Length: 206
Length: 222
Image (cartoon, rainbow over all chains, first blue to last red; front, top):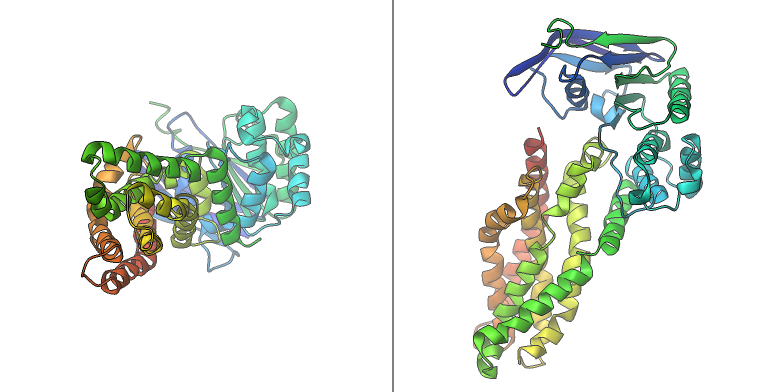
């Protein structure tokens, strides 16, 4: 399995964000997208999900299911946590597990929450969780259904140091299983074998 | 649990917990029906004659109530991003969300509508038939409203615009709904013809509206 992109270019609001962008990520490797604010990191991820059009170029998940788009093969974690405040953390996870074709039994959700260190809040309404706890519940969504590709946008926002290193362990385990991670971030994620893709270097943040 | 069932269960749960669903819709319906005699006057014969139309207008407005949040809440918290690439096609997501919205907001109205018909001085016998016209017509209202909700998903104050977009499209439903309900509560016009037209509109909406709403969602969200 390999995520390959070639000659990608994107425009937002008449401004060219990036052009001639090419990268490859083999199974078991992570690609960290860095760059100043407004360099197009989030837009690149949303483009790979199919939410935004690229002006040129293309991308493919080689060795994946040819019937499905890259977005359908991927877990996308955006800035928003995709949690419903009225539901408990466990119900939120059980819904995503069911809706994404994963394992939605309560024990599976509890196990996923335990891996992000939140097993004790399984029956708390999501609106009562702190920002970091919401983010960790959102990260647990990556664990309740399998996708070979993770597209993560600032995954460690609001996480404390312990949760950041726990999440580094989760990502490393996923990579060791042959997954591919593409993460846009400003903070180092603490991964071995991670390549870096720097956006907006030419413009220099101008 | 299958993805479709999981989505329906979640929508149902959220509607029940947040409110703004079943109870508020029914209370809104009650208030609308209750203030009509103050505007029209206490003439019982006139109220009974206008009863079917009042019930239908009230049902139309209460169905649209809360429909603007049908997709917007999921758009705002990022859930829609995940659902779009999930195993369920977006058309089916739309249909399931409409079904959940209909069962939590329109179904209670239909159940209590005979009581409100009595409040308007209508004869008791045809009230079941009037409720049947509501049951046949409100799915079309929900589904047509879903198209408007999808078009205004990224607008901050989209509720009013949605009503402006949707209300003209609901005129056929209103015409045949009131015609059938009036025929049921007396008069010489036949009941079955407008009632079957009403069923046809709802069936057409079930078949077509999810595609329109899903296309609007994909297009608007760029």
